[in-house]
Image 1 (cartoon, one colour):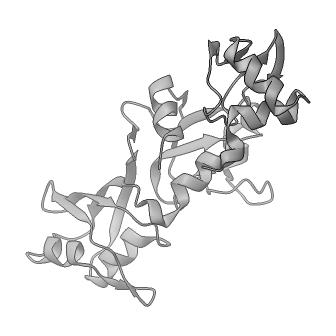
Image 2 (cartoon, helix red, strand yellow):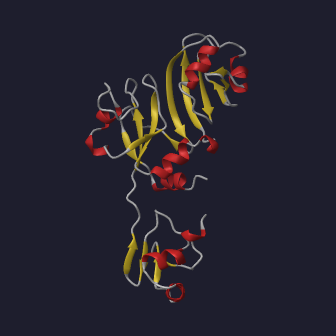
Image 3 (cartoon, helix red, strand yellow):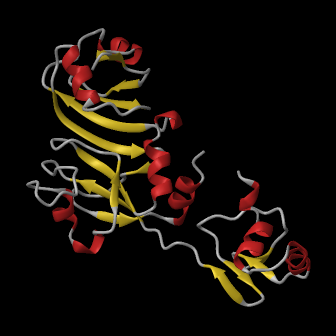
Amino acid sequence: MNHRNKILYFLVKNAKISFKEAQKSLANNEVLLNGNPCFENEMVGVYDEIYWRGTCLQTPNRFKYYKYYKPRGIECTLNPNIENNLAEKLGTEYKELFYVGRLDKQSEGLLLLTNDGNIYNKIIDPKKHLEKEYLVDLESEIASNFKQKMEAGIEILGKITQACEINLSGNKSFSIILTEGMNRQIRRMCFALDNYVIFLKRIRIGNIELNNLKSGEIKELSIKEIDYLRKLA
């Protein structure tokens, strides 16, 4: 992290004091970082509350975090001109939020909603290899070599998909864990193996699980879930 994110530099910039005075204030416990005295080498970020001599220099950005069960038939778009769009489904109460982790119209399940751009970038960054888990039902019975081929990688969109984890749960159903997010990836992979997806539901993004959320329901993330997202490498 940049050394200029240290509390010492923050004080000089925002309290308009010298380095010497900032060091003295820190030594005298006149600076509170999230309610606690701090040292000059401590890092600060947008999630921190900072007081200096009783004056608030920074309040945490009021970010919001939700998980939402996207119903089947809803387009993952905030464009009001597109029929059955997500913004219309969510309503004005959540108009400042954007979705993280797109699902196609015929798929359902877990979406994350937030106004925190930092979290958004972490989740969609392909270099993070964040796991996403799905439940899938197929039109036809699963072939004997289906699991092996899917896990090894399938050529779609001119690329070989990365290794994934498949767990068969029936002769036409399975769960899959991906660490990438190519366009309609699961549907294309199955089609390449001469089968068709008739049901697709995302149940997990990283450590955030859909659990017992019902179709169309929205729920604020717990403190533990938010902390997990903020600490993503």
